[in-house]
Image (cartoon, rainbow, N blue to C red; front, side):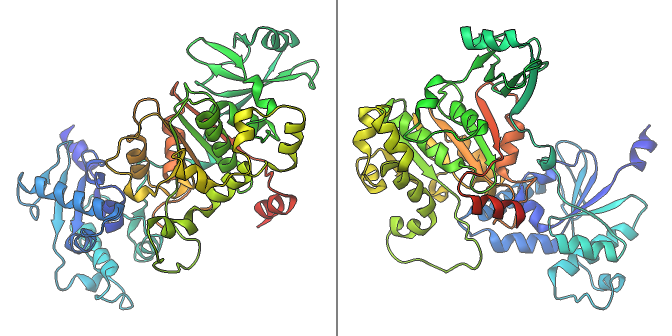
Length: 462
């Protein structure tokens, strides 16, 4: 058995971007042999003074390696706590001879490739270069070296949990749901907590009902009936938006994730629900809105002014949505006021601006850069464009939540500006997958664009 175990041990060479993405990556390879080229250590050192997430990760990598140094000599190999070994490999003259002449020694990626080839040629164990750099994986393949992406924490985006299930039932089940507000889920198979359900009469398809699975009571419950009267003056235009508002307005659901393409109403729904919960129902002390700072296209460089002035361009999409909700809510809001369906509190905040809400302390705009170390109790927190966050950054945000706080994450995994994550490895999809079985979490994928016919066509065709 010992000989068999030794024969299947693999050699993994880690690239810099893997360690900067996840400082704990060195502990994720079980009983295999890890090799870190000295070039990687030098590259990590260049990031350690940065005051962003990459800098923090670089410092954590250095601390992890320094602790392992106490176990033995890194250049000879040390045993990892969970099994396996780790060795820092020096780049030596002559290693470049294993690479094509077009790959020059001055480039760090090529020295990492040379070390990986040296490890592969020094024994019979399978050798794999682990890197998040697509071009480096291509170069490795060209020279005959196996290369893989770092898969830990990745989610199969094509099979991402949608939060919605459709269920054919008898007409009696639907009538019971409408009559008593809840019904046993016997005809719908296994359901997840807070999964939203479209019930369809098997004999009359037009006879339908919308519900949500309450795991605590093991029943399908009817959605909030007051949603049809509008939330901060807006109305759900499709079933997914109706589902989303039910999750957003439920105080027992502390984490809500909304995934959808541009124009599906993710941000507007979240802010509308937040304003109602804070200003009308007084369920939370403040609406806290934030988003990661990533430019689309070429960055304009440093912005002048104080913090709020610097944040203004990044937060303008948030301001636009808030001003829309406060400016009379458009034609639908005016009709609702005429029908008497807008509360006095809601009517009282119409024709205000987001600046007034900020001045009176009802709403706060906060850059994620400064959220580390904070404790956020009894607030309704919205993190927009969460697809640009890493899983580690999302963990940092969620662990800031104090007693009574609700956190809403919105985003579109097809529109990622962060070069270090993709549709499968970003923090938003990571939370969707990890929280899918939790009774305090809810998720819905919004599919139909409602911004305009042009926006919907562009999202589908371009």
